[in-house]
Length: 421
Image 1 (cartoon, rainbow, N blue to C red):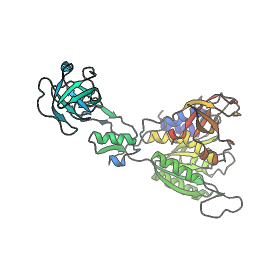
Image 2: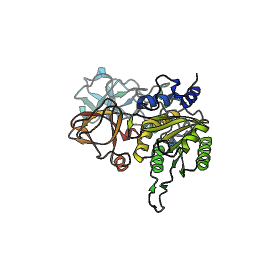
Image 3: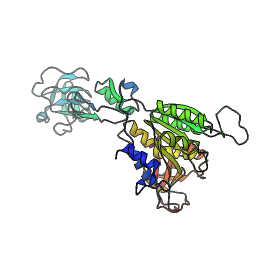
Image 4: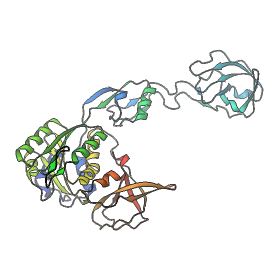
């Protein structure tokens, strides 16, 4: 059975898999199921390195040169033959960075050399200027370095033929400088992922319009826009779509036809208007899960035609948490990235946290430094509608299914936002 068939069977008959329970899906299980159905985009484009920041390499980068390209001095000082270190040496010339000494070094001679200058023929050691004394053109070495000291060898940093950036690597600022140091002006990258999103719900109002009784501003589209931009996706905001079957159907089908991924917020929880669920069952193969997590219990994932679909809960914090915990990893995979894992580490939590075992919780936390140690505290109230908790936080405090109440001073796992977005 291929993955598409499995997705279709699970969507139509959840009991076809022995260990599959859509009403009690763990965070880990949901991630694993999603990963089965992902394959990166295949289209490749060639771009200048100045446009490559954050893009995913489709072809590994191999160096055509040695870096450094020649043996050169690591110090300002004097280049000499180590066997002659005990005797006074006569300065026979000067080697500057970009202007090498091209003559021959006579017996008992040395070359005044600057950092980065090519090591002259016949020389095997450089002594730093501070370990010498000079009278006229005679140099005496006051502290003899070991043979070969202070010489950077050709290819010491990067050897010709070496792979310096792997396939699937996302280009960082240092990589751009590295590429330039190799004389590489252009790179081949996967095209940007096209992601569309929209909100559902008659109670939502766009920013700039007055609120009527019972209405709220649609914040989720702005959070989603920011998270998608941070990932480097081509992002398309399709607005807020009312709970109208025809409008939802038209928006959903057009989005799926034109984009790699469609994301909606709202419409997948029990008790919400079920127009979206009916449309997804009609036009796609979509799994509806109740994840054992807080916040963000409802989650939908599947395919509509060739487009991947993610249905996120409507509460603002739940939208962001489910995006970070499920959608972000999936999008990185679809982008061709070889690095999709979210970094985490353990620190002391200075606040007590009430929790019952049985589900994973993603508390909003503030990492701070106390003395030489990093610690974490919660942002306070953790309700799924308290969007200010996400704005104040700089990390998630991750409490797994087995965890109960956490006492102040306990070690907890944290996911820093700077490693997430």
